Amino acid sequence: MMIRQDKATEKEPNVTTQLRDGTEVPLEGTDRSPLEPGGDLIYVAGRTQGQMFWLRFKRHKLAVVSAGVLLALYLIAIFGPMLSPYSFDKIEYTGAKPPSMSHPLGTDELGRDEMTRVIYGGRISLMVGIVVAVLSAGIGTVVGMIAGFYGGRIDNLLMRFTDMMLALPLLPLLMVAGLIVADLKIDSMWAIVVILGLLEWMAVARLVRSSFLALREKEFVEAARAMGASDWRIITQHLLPNSIAPIVVNTTLVVGAAIIVESVLSFLGFGIQPPTPSWGNMLSNARSTMVLYPWLMWAPGVAIVLTVLSVNFLGDGLRDALDPTQVRVRE
Image (cartoon, rainbow, N blue to C red; front, side, top):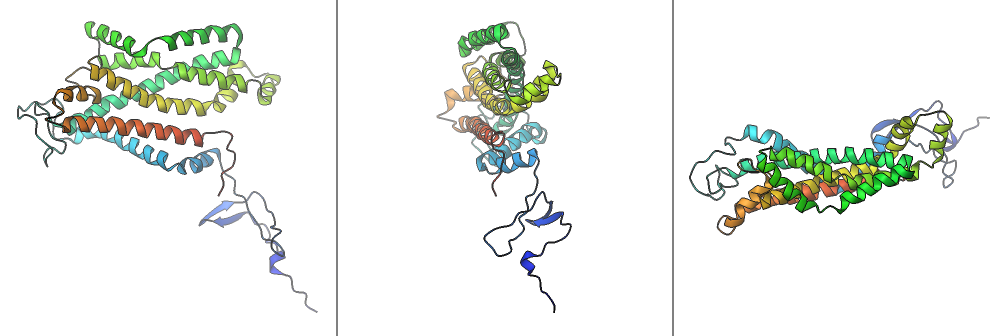
């Protein structure tokens, strides 16, 4: 007599991979569904932290689009002036001309090509945002790490200093600093970058401190101490990686805030000084002629709005993707 075995209960020997979504992936375990006779094999593919981050991030559509927009803006700012046939400071005395084939965004009252100036101004404004964000994140992370990890008098001293810095009126202080920089003949761009970096770190410091205060009482920190790990190793290898999400998110938001502050200062005449263009001083120059030559106002204004919105949406997407509490990604 021949005994036939049901194929539904038949196991495949030495199965290590499975074709999933057209890709062969490794298997980490098997299970049987109780809903079908004999059950079917269900395989769970292992994912790295980077893969989980990307799966969460790409579901935030606005964040993905914003990342593409920012990348395009930075590429245009870097390579655009090299490809433009015009110079940002070349005066032609043709007067302001509306957009045309030769000048897609028109020209200003001195005959300078508006598109070239917007691209070059983007190079200045975007660089200010990036450098200020990195500088403020570095200072705030160091202050927050020390305050949150050691606590006590060190924490009290650093946080009172942080509160004092938060109490300073930002815009009037920057206006006074701009006047001093102009009198001393210092490069206004780098002076603004340094001043903004020294005045924008407080939010990062408070976020890092609160994260360290919560994490330093966890079991893995006690285990590291019991194994003889130094304070520096605990901070850099255990606490800081678990606090990276708020740092990254806040850093992206500082980029947008720095661009807005620089634009406001340049608009008021205390920021980047002509003939070097920035989006802020271009808006300031267009203020008196916006009725006659509206294209001089729209180009830098739209660039500022588009950049700041993209940075904020990107920050939202990074916040969700870097959330350490999301340990699973649902299919």
